[in-house]
Length: 132
Image 1 (tube, rainbow, N blue to C red):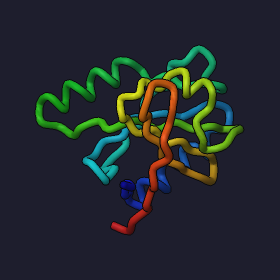
Image 2 (image 1 turned 30 degrees about the vertical axis):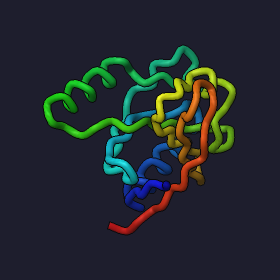
Image 3 (image 1 turned 90 degrees about the vertical axis):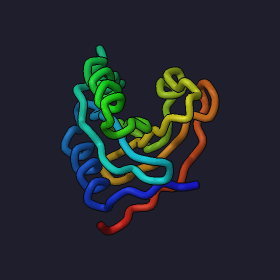
Image 4 (image 1 turned 90 degrees about the horizontal axis):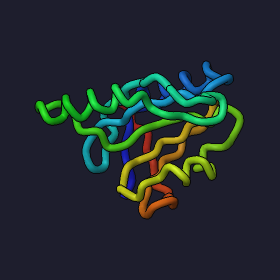
């Protein structure tokens, strides 16, 4: 099964990635099964943001707190590869927990969606940009 995303939201995420050639951008994805509804940019607190990403833990806790209060459900996250491809890197695989979370990986010109199906591995997921 694939996931839909608004073309406006996808365009904003690609622009953010393009505008940050020196560091990986990252954030959280919210939605339902089959649809990415919104994305929230988060600070990249990695020691080397030019080569890695780490979402600010405070943003993660806040997102789950909002969900428990009836807010949107986090379904994964996004991050960019400023000088790479929109495919999971070895570093990404080392962080993949196999929990079924979505990983939207961006470059300046491409976005590809992945799901962690097992610890350390990814499955490609179809991503469909849709007009609002």
